Length: 107
Image 1 (cartoon, rainbow, N blue to C red):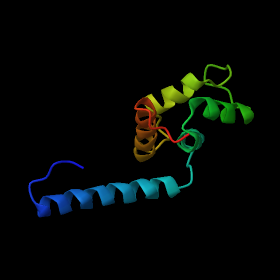
Image 2: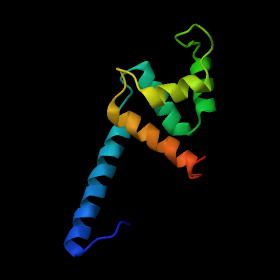
Image 3: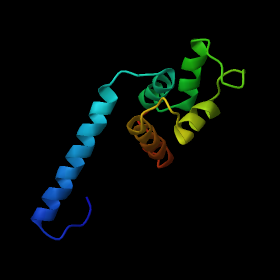
Image 4: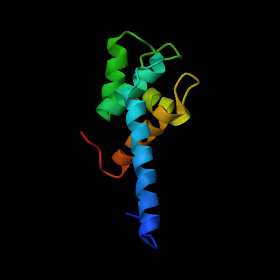
């Protein structure tokens, strides 16, 4: 919890956290609107670029360069985004990346 100066400020901070969590849950409940979003959802689900790469390969989809889809392609999609991926979904995926870097991955 962040430092606060009084109860009113604490209530405001907690309210902001609730709003953020509610918005994140709403984002995760949506259906993918594109194949790239499907890839991002798979990454969020597994927390693994390797498992996500395997998922994409199992569908027979290749990378833009024409070769097999790689873990690096997953990382690049998360880092750079794409026009057909919502910013909110990318934000969640990037938070998963950061959790993994800090050792807090869920799998």
